[in-house]
Image (cartoon, rainbow, N blue to C red):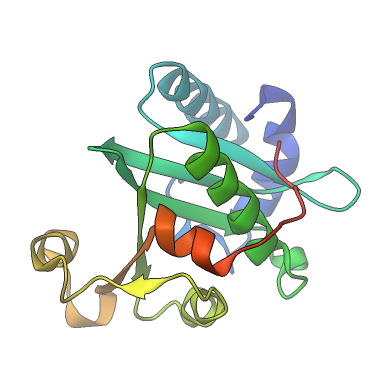
Length: 178
């Protein structure tokens, strides 16, 4: 679960120029990040989002994974990890653990992911998940909506994961979220 005590460590990681442009909760100051975290915790209590802190092997907060815009048993995934933890496998482990929680303990049965076409790191990470499918042709109304008012250089690709697809491709995971 998200906790206020993690805010200072997470803020130090989120303000990194390699991370900040891609995060959903943008805060310029520590006080703003406290406020945004408090809002996220309240939104989760109201059933509007599901958000977890990603932990390192040493149980230190290193990022956030969230499901937002939840409607009709589906939502959009948002994930970020601090730059010094890039390339260490935390992204895939966090997603595996988060999806297991979502698909085993909630009514969520579909997760959408919108990834900026210019975000090469996220595009590459996405290819490592065998249960992810392209959603652009299957959900053209969503694809159009997420790219409305965007330039071609700043547009998104759309992907999705279903509960069935996830379970077909996954057997176990190491839990690294709290």
